[in-house]
Image 1: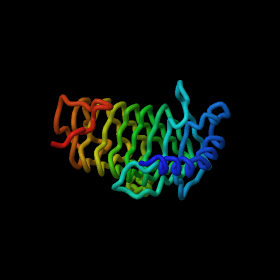
Image 2 (image 1 turned 180 degrees about the vertical axis):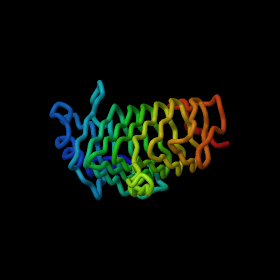
Image 3 (image 1 turned 135 degrees about the vertical axis):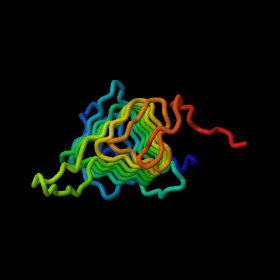
Image 4 (image 1 turned 45 degrees about the vertical axis):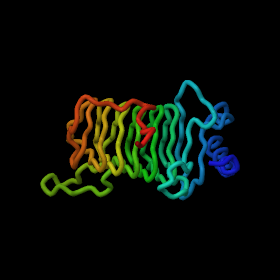
Length: 232
């Protein structure tokens, strides 16, 4: 990105960023502009946002910035009718959609990273631990939205359940994370894995498939060293 493009991007982000920071955050946090948001669209700002981190600094949370060339440069769709808590730095890139319902609480751990094409629907409770990485087009939902009626019990089945993703979990492209999922630390999920509440997930393992099962053991993602630097 050229310097001119960089400054144009910042200029376009400054006004929505000021609005979001001063609407949601205490004044002492807001003046530091910790949240930078680029090209917000189809948004709803009725809920609450909190930052629970020891150090607050400008741009620690970036939303919608175009860093993925394979996806549209259309910013971010953010519908927040409930509660969003940031535990530290966060990067949610371009072409992403996040919806937090009125009774939803979305918690994003420190160093949360979402690439592009992400869809997060939080109607109840979704928790991400620190160093979470979501690959392209990952879908996360804690609700089925359409409850089924139990004819024997004469009542509707519960169609939602909280999601708890522990520290240092990596979900590759097209993964689907469904209601009721709980994972341990240091998990990797391969492309197009379907992660369900009934799965058995282990630390330091690669899981894959539908439903996701252990594929490889005794491996881990090293944060900051998980990119190919040279293709020979």
